[in-house]
Image 1 (cartoon, rainbow over the protein chains, first blue to last red):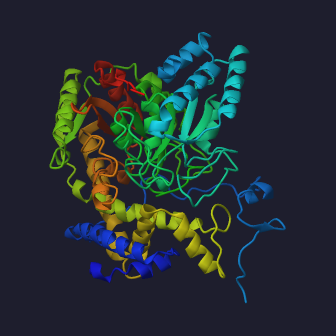
Image 2: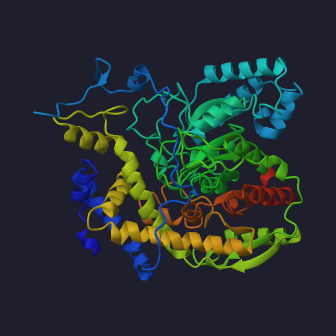
Image 3: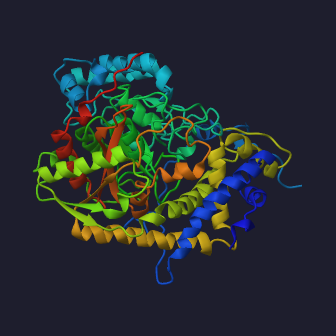
Length: 95
Length: 490
């Protein structure tokens, strides 16, 4: 893949980030440089290597499926930007 | 002068009733008032709440509570602004959290409280822990106490500066690619990153979940051992925390020092870009270890040069997912729009700073359809090679010795508009997180003009904190660096 494929506007939209035209231009140039640097990983042959997602020496950590206390409604809503009837308020989603 | 004591010195005085927790807390508050206008380590603190906690500690001491049961009873400790303390603000030094107040305690905070600590103050940081200089805070940069025209390192710059400036006896920070060790080095204090899984991250705002660890900043290695013991252990609320028993770390310090230990010197770390004074301080430290009876071996970590590239794929990918929760719906800033889509985009566009936006974009890109295999999967494979380098090296040596940072503290503004140069300043600390091992930075000297601290990094095996602390303590006891304190001209 060529670094020139990198479209800041498109990726920022995927990430739900509104950028100004100035930000788009600046981040595009800066990230182009970072992506250029990252290209060095292509020098390595990794065809026989397994990926590492994390370094924790545990697998399949489970717990008993038991009912326990959780955060109460007041605490959960304490930081809400908008609320009504004990619920988070958001713009209309369904027409 | 209570504020200049170490944690161990303070608890001895508290136990003998030569000082009270209130006096110790007051001494910190006075020092903050005197020096923090220049340093800006603290984003906020609640004076009355801190003194009330101190009074409660004094009452407990008066009724016979002992430091053997509650090792931090009466000790003021401040926290990086990404750890949750019930009823205290939490902002990650970002505008997007608005006036967020934590509804619960982080596990490390529960543990500190159980140990009797006075928990006060929110410490400055790079926004969402993304940065190496604390210049990315939405509320202004922190300055290095040794030279206020310079950065303290980052991202836990406030945590390091507060300890260096004697504003607090110890602090906690977080380390994803060096965010504890690098600022500790640049501020001349001890900073420990525990092994991945050693400390619960419940109540830590996540940056890159496969890399993040919480750890202490202290004035001595002994204090670091004490704090690590308090905060370690398995927690059912963080399934990556391991059931491995927690050793009595402080008691390991007394046993035998580094005599007979094998220390590895990676040849890939003593190369171009390394400052001459840093290089000679580290070389002198290695000779000191030799004098103390350690055996020095040259080792190779052949994939070192790929670590920064792997890190900026893995860490940004994980960050782009973790930071999706900041959408203006349940907490923090909201910038309204006609549809939820507009609300998300506007809120995130207005709330996040430049570096956070850059990393979210990069992380989204490397995970996006068509690029996942080429970037993210490849980076995970190279991560395996980096981890194998360390595990192979640890078959031959007990610890690895390196510089913590290629240079001493740089000037405010010097790298702030050049992300790539900033990223490369973490070149010696990043591999430790990718490999999931433990590491510590300790003071190992000063540059001449201006006088700035230099840090030595020791890296240990997974869950090898005892050997790490033992060697660090032996070195510290044999050298004068940790006794050098900042003398403020203001």
